[in-house]
Every structure is written in structure tokens, then in C-alpha cells.
Length: 181
Image 1 (cartoon, rainbow, N blue to C red):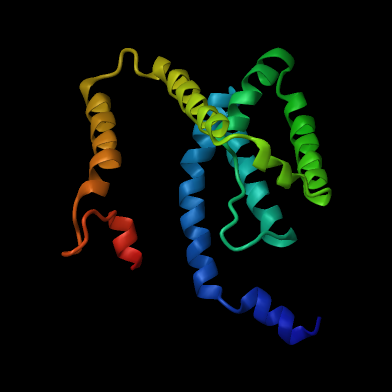
Image 2: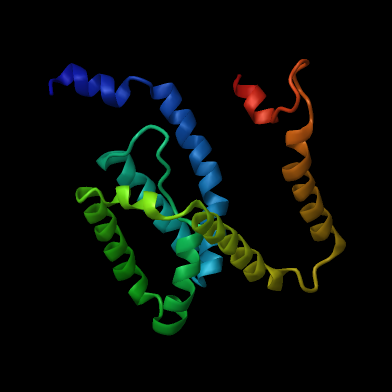
């Protein structure tokens, strides 16, 4: 690769890349804090880990539209690990997970996913949502009415905003979809 191609690849869309980085960072902060609380570790551990993931992915690869970061599934799996063995095993398990992902990619094991029925994947995601929800219930006890009002407002936005017609002639359209149209 010559200098021009490297320059075009790395600095061809600086404005878009910086804007995307800011959006991801703003979304990553509360997500990292929430998942670290679910996993039972200090929120600073989640912030440092998310920052490291973002920096590593920025330099070693990725694809357009690829999302790399903490997930609720991993946070739920780490609860018992951290509770039983402490924080010192978390780094080793994370590195092992990364190695397994690389090996799955090298051996192209993603094609095996077509044998997993859709109902199993939907059930897994729903069970994950239920587990995350129930892990948050302890934080609702003893709170004032403002917190409950914010929860109700958030749920109303999630479920009702997509039903609001924004463009004439279209049945229903989400605000964010219309913003980017």
C-alpha cells in the first residue's frame, strides 16, 4: 500500500468519523456503566474496558456498521464469575473470549448459525431482557415518584413514538428514520 491509499483510507472521511466517534462515545458511557453494575464490578472498570475495546477496534480492524463493545449477555455471564472468583479472573476470561472469537472467524464457524432455529435466538434475547430487567428491580425499591415517572415516560417514548406519523402519506415512521431520510 502506498501513502496515498493509506491517507485516503484513514483520513478520507474525518468529519464523518469524528461525528460517529462522538455518537458512539455518548452511547457507550451509560451502556458501560449499566453493564458493569449488572456484572457486579465498579463502573470505572466498565468505562476503562469499553474505552480499550473502542481503541483496539479502531486500529486493528472492523467493518462499516460493525459494533464492538460490552453486551448484556456478557455482563450477565460475568455476574457469577465475579461473585465466585473475584475481579482477577475477569481479564483472563475476556482474553479467552477474544481468542475464541478469532478462532471462530478463522475457521468460519459462523455458517453453523444457520442450524440454530430463529425461535431459539428470539428466546435467548427475550430471556436476556428479562434477566437484565429483574437485575434492575432492586434499584426501584424506596425511590420517589420522579424515578417512576421517568420510567413511564421512557417506556411511552419507546412504544408510542414509532407510531406517530411524521411524513404525510406514510403510515408510521420513527423520528430517527425520518431525520436521516
